[in-house]
Length: 466
Image (cartoon, rainbow, N blue to C red; front, side, top):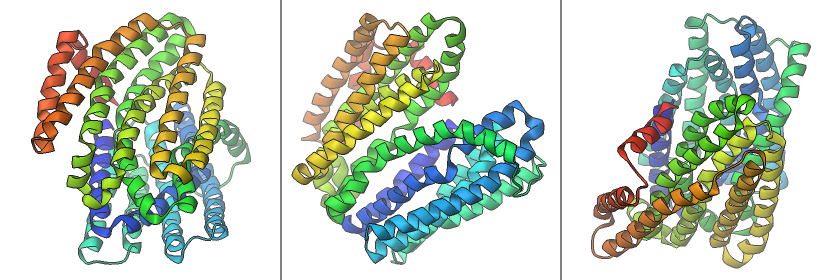
């Protein structure tokens, strides 16, 4: 699944890059906002049922068809309500006709996605991720093909959203066929009150956490849509997408350590602290060079990939790359709190961070524009990471001396690499500075003791296993 996730994100990133380069800054802003706005309502449509379905069908496989039928019926209801709320909201907020039409179509995509993910949840419950990987990558490639065709023929912006809709519809057909032919499942849109009640109770905390997380991810875009211009939103979309593209790294690592942390929570909490320290060490090794490298190369990279029209986004990208450090590390603190049954603490912390983010955006957006949004993201991620670290240390004893040692072993080589790469980029094409930076960082990392062949192999296994 990690390979599929990386391929999906790579294709998605290429698709967005092509779109941003060809349709212009303002149209990119409208396109980006339509998807961001719809994504928030997708949480209402799913309501955490997928996660519960995966868990319960794995525990009681003989009940899978009953669970599936009830969840499908529930999702039909929740999808219709979510779409109605989506349509109502976009009209109440008085967006332009083009924006509303894009959101209406993106909402249909949301409904279709809501159904094919149900079947992926069942496949996960059967411990089979192959078909999900094929579906995810295939749908993204299909989106790329249809979208590229639309761009080549200069079709309207609607077609760029329709590319997702077509891929989602075919994904529904694909998952239904796999469920019937490979897993021999039979279902209907029947509603079992007892099953629904059980699933609903389990799903409420997940839905709440998902909603807070989704608002945290897109609240800045929502505020920008009313406080800034479409052009500024287009500038913002590029650094946001670049930062988001790398999230598969902490997601894969946290997915790898979460089961072990959960097991240790029952019998040996000291080992959770050891695992936490190792996880942060792995992330230090990856996120510091990534952040410093992109901070150094932000301007030439933006011009090369997106064109000179997106150059005003360079400072925002640099700030978001600094924010990425805290965002990466916060994934592990979240995994620790959830694994030790402190989900309420994590949800409360996320709520606080969301409030901080909204307040800072309201203050900074009118004064600094997209740079204010980037500063708000940096401050919010810092609060999330620092708060998570404080609570983690309260529940599980952490070795801060060892953490600081690992921090210095990776931070200093990455900072030196970033400075040298920035210097070289003023005399060479930035593409040539990337391998130079990799070599410099690797050498300094081995000299500082921050890396060994054994540690390198461990990091590779942790990230790629999931």
